[in-house]
Amino acid sequence: MIRQLTIDDLELILPLGLVFSKEAQYPGGFVPEIFIRNWKGHLENGFGVIFGMFKDEQLVGILGGFDYSDPNNDDLVAMETFWYVAKEHRGGGIKLLDAFE
Image (tube, rainbow, N blue to C red; front, side, top):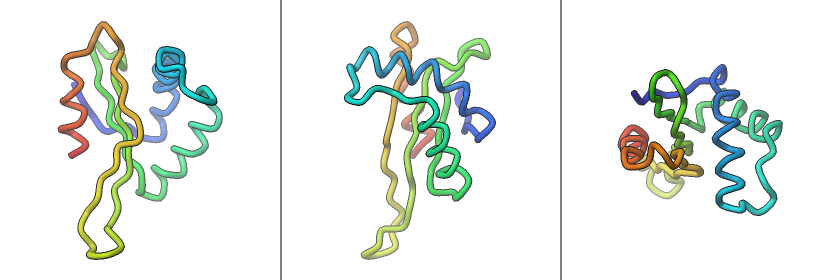
């Protein structure tokens, strides 16, 4: 199941963020407090959106990004900022992108 996540769901993302950071050797690492603070603001102001993929009520994949009006022509623009699916659940992650689109 895929659904749009809310501010109340941000804590659910932290374990996947930590795994991603380690797996990708993400420069600067993943700082849960900063992630929560920043994404809470993005979700509150309607600039950000996050989708979660669930298997048996467990969050196994995430995709977050921004949508906004192009400043040159007002077309809707979407920009993915993170996308991660736990290794054992890969293969269906494209559904996250479909939900974002």
